[in-house]
Length: 137
Image (tube, rainbow, N blue to C red; front, side, top):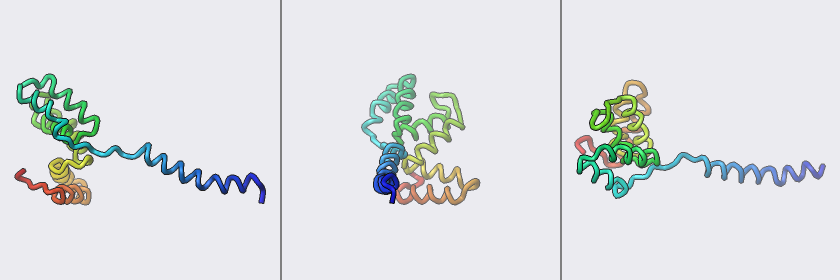
């Protein structure tokens, strides 16, 4: 067998495996962060009535995959509370929060999907139940 072919076969397969593993590590979907303590400053601003600072702070945390911040923004946008009511933005944050593993978000996202995608709806509703979410929470 040709030396070049032997080298490609020897280094090619292991090299490809290493490349795949590195790629999976570098490009994996970021996991959610659910840290109530991280949200404490936002809740403190809300309690003080300082929504001008609370909403951007929550937005920053939400973009860093904090599922509590994502759900918080969903509630603000869907109710039009302290921000302009925006159903599209609300649903985007609800979806992100559900994907990140927030049980209440999974429940509401599942309900939202019931007519358009029953299989996905059941997945999210089941995930919420599995996490211990009850509708009256």
